[in-house]
Length: 193
Image (cartoon, rainbow, N blue to C red):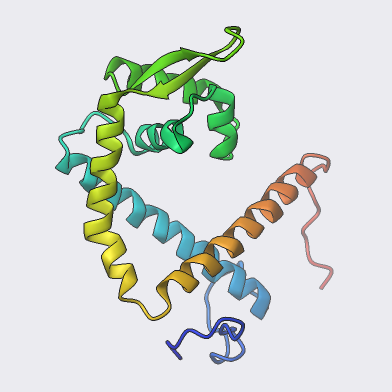
């Protein structure tokens, strides 16, 4: 496989040779490419979770879940208080009750606190000084252990930006497919052959 990264000349299954898979999900080269990406994202997610668990362990935050740490980072985004619904939206989640549970746990650890909005009507959350310090420590670990290595990749920044745009586009496609599927009964997937 050609490892040289040339934006606009990304490899395809066809350019890398015939797709040889045992996947029931991959009968065409397009299906094989989609399956390769999905499989890579699943493995990436597991690696991402292991890395984050280790970073939290390094900080002695063994009772904080990766989801809760992610919520803490989102609360700290732009240094502005946010409602649970906005946090859920930014994470593309529809389980606001689970976000609220994470926020209550983070409040109990003194990492976030309640904050009234400008009108004083809604309760938002903001990061405490302790929470900000935890976020900064996680960012420092990330810089030392991960970002430095990514910086050594050829065109690492371009690769990340291209990947982020691709995944963001696919999020929209998967969301749309999920919405469309709610309007259908079970499909007859039996073959006419």
